[in-house]
Image 1 (tube, one colour):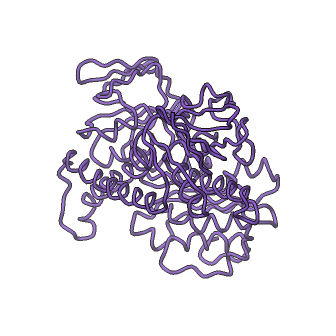
Image 2 (tube, one colour; image 1 turned 135 degrees about the vertical axis):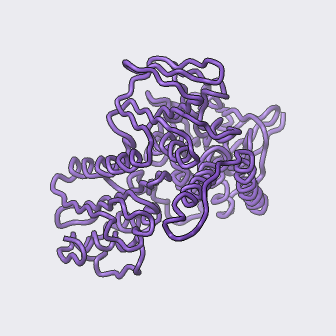
Image 3 (cartoon, one colour; image 1 turned 90 degrees about the vertical axis):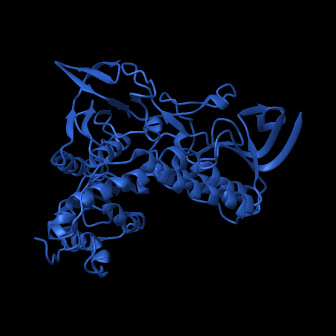
Length: 463
């Protein structure tokens, strides 16, 4: 058996894992990156990138339908699913090739295969076949996979997960999406744009539970106007396939569709370290402290293994943090890094309309601070938003006479506001400080500026 020793051993090459590897290598640490599939993980191959590529196709379809309103003569005449898949694959391939080049150029050792965490008197390490790589720090970055729903057993053809939906060789004619979180909403939006009749079924009392209630309600109204059949409080008792059809039994009703997407969240993948003594929470996530350290000395966990929002950029932040922490421990950085709080991470749902937020929603802000001030403004008065229908909201929340602690928005393109939003919330800016800045005209950013003007007591276009 071969034994290697390195500064950082990373198990899993998704967003958190490869970010840890790249940052550690940049700080002069020796790094071994272990992956059983493809570098880039879920985000690049089965998540962020392919879904956004397909959502772009949906935007093109919607633009073709509405082009006549602008005097452009075109029409939507269906989708060639094979071409769409091929174009998506080319996008993923280019990014994958570039990422592999970055890893190689950084001098990172890569090992292909199923890794297993080993903890013994020699310290922590990862075993791959007959090779064990020991590390002064071992990073667990094995990610997450789609959760199953007992009443809807997957068959990979008509009853599918989000992974399988991205390889579908057809656009469903009538589809039921089970789950009104980010994944379910994005696929519902995509398929509605491509011409499917979509039923969106959510067991809770509203969609997008992680978002501010007012923003989620406005989103739901917009989704319904698009023709999506949104049902909240939906109790599904059985899902059965019959040939090319699938029957869903709901309380007092039966739906008949040709495809069912089960999008009820994702669960952490922990098999690679299940027998090594790594502590788990009741939800199955890895138990960590505020510096992402597990119960085992020298072993940390990042990304979707850690309970919290399942975001690729959260994985990036975690990976960078543990790499810098390892470098500090080795004497390569003078000061330890500060971990980023989940509440300071921007969140974007890439549906039509988009939903975006950073910081606290109104309910959470009121629970934490008590006395708060809230300004909600409609995008109908924003010149740029008028080019895309003019619908949507921007909501800014501040502590009374204090800093802004939350920003949320719904509408076409509002995700682009969250770069500024994160700076405002992350730096604890006060509304009058933001109001002193000039936002370019005509841009969506003006809506953010106008909301801060209003909270600063000097509204211009808003009353």
